[in-house]
Length: 146
Image (cartoon, rainbow, N blue to C red):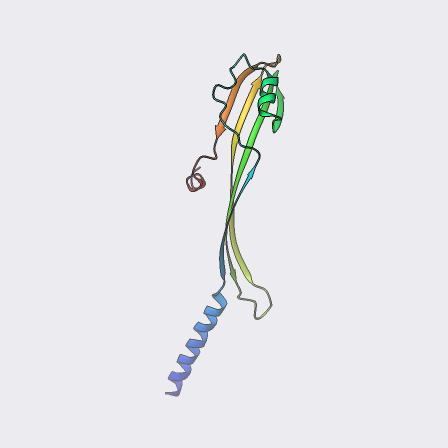
């Protein structure tokens, strides 16, 4: 009977020790940041071959980026939507013995851009407009697709 008590006591102490060691802190973090001004579809606001670079600058202000490629000037207006998420688990296994702990964490970031690009010929006349709004796509659907 004495052996049975010691065996159960040892088992209870061992299970309690394992639970204490594995009890940790599980946390989830989600952060969303927006950088830049709203970028909207210009629709028919700027007719091709009739709009000059001054009209665009007067209407939209200074662009985020300016490029000159093969006799074509580009004005780029862009807004970035940054969504970060992270999952972490802190396991205080070594807190008692050494003063440290084990931490497991996973983080991921998804950056989407709303972009508006104006292409001008060397005379400063509008040749083409490129617009893409990716921020309207659902977060989880975008996160789990390639």
